[in-house]
Image 1: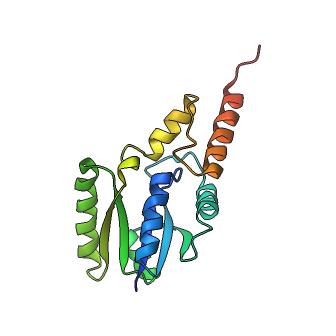
Image 2: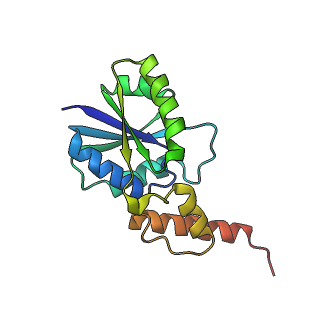
Length: 168
């Protein structure tokens, strides 16, 4: 049995992510969900908040842990003694960039495999960006994210609205 990492920004974690994690947990001895620090993105949630939301959302999975990292995913995988990198795919449009990344990782670390897992049909449309847009426009996201994430998003948007409110 192998150790797998599932890297991502998880800003925020969605039920689509949870689905991939649950299925990976059934396949591997241990799955490390790894929040990556990407200097090219400005996340809504801090690194600590994303780790906390994931930890709370995944507490029922005994062979899943949550961590964070900066730098190359393959170097992090080596550091964690992982043999597999999990990547979720929603649509064919995801495949090209994911395939390029997998080939690059394979060149850098030939002993580490990338496993692509297709989203279930019910989550094909779902992304963290979609969730943030829906909640920002006042829509319901209860079917898209764990309860704790829904509440955190609502709190984040309510505090942003208060900060941007004009007096009288």
